[in-house]
Length: 343
Image 1 (cartoon, rainbow, N blue to C red):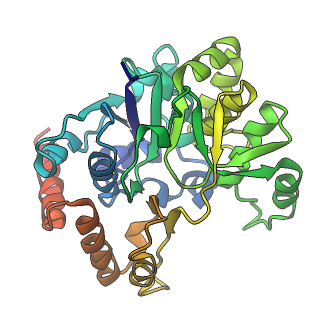
Image 2 (image 1 turned 180 degrees about the horizontal axis):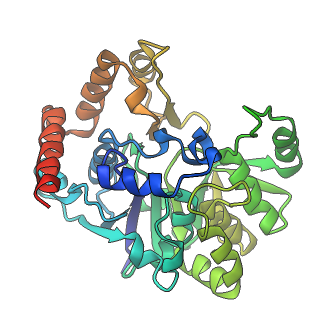
Image 3 (image 1 turned 45 degrees about the horizontal axis):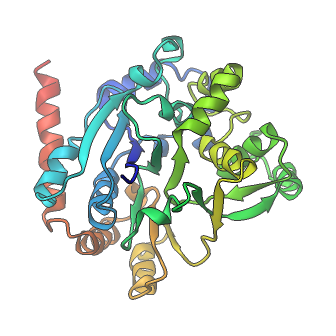
């Protein structure tokens, strides 16, 4: 019998007043407000998770269960999935941070995806083979299990090799902003490579990342201090590593990793108010491009209303979501607000 594949999505609704208040209680240090550490964009939710969930149901129906990791929140993704894909066999389960951080509750609350990702393998009932999604990721074409896990059990890593010496040079010459040198995505990849004394790492990019639970469980059981240091930071820290990169490099060292290039296969969208028709132009460019399989919509809240509407219309058509998605999302927000006011 073929092993199950699960999906894991880390999600937060930073618009939730309770979560916002909690975050403010722990963000007294000035650097926490910096965009790369704890800026508002890291916590804003504009419905991206529903595109992510819908894309899994449409293009990866072989997934057994979607685990959504939250901090005392529930996006009601199961309800959304049944509304738009009534015949799906994919289950949805919400997992609270307290479950992942059991026996390490002293590090909660956390507002740091790098810390949370360190302990995703501790989700009860999680399959040996799982794929991690940021909540702003979405699939764009039909996938097979072999696109994430090869028939011989190897992990499929989508990314291109990057030299650690060059990465350190880029880090050294990176200009500071207001006296602070930004800590970027590639910096966390480099930290993972340095941890394992590797001379190169996979530049895994903005695409879903398959992982093998046993690799992480074995490594962190043997190196509990490494796990604890990485999970202890409430907000991002420049010494932290990317756990998906760590898993890929561990698999590579053990000969159970197959690399596939991401070149020409991803759509990364990052709109801003300064680029009025950014999303419309990029959607037009990729229309009919069958090479692209993975998408990421970063900072959707920064797009103007017309551009955002164009994106939602396009992605609803791509994923087969009901065209009244925005109305449903608005009604969900209203329902949540009424629930909060009654507590």
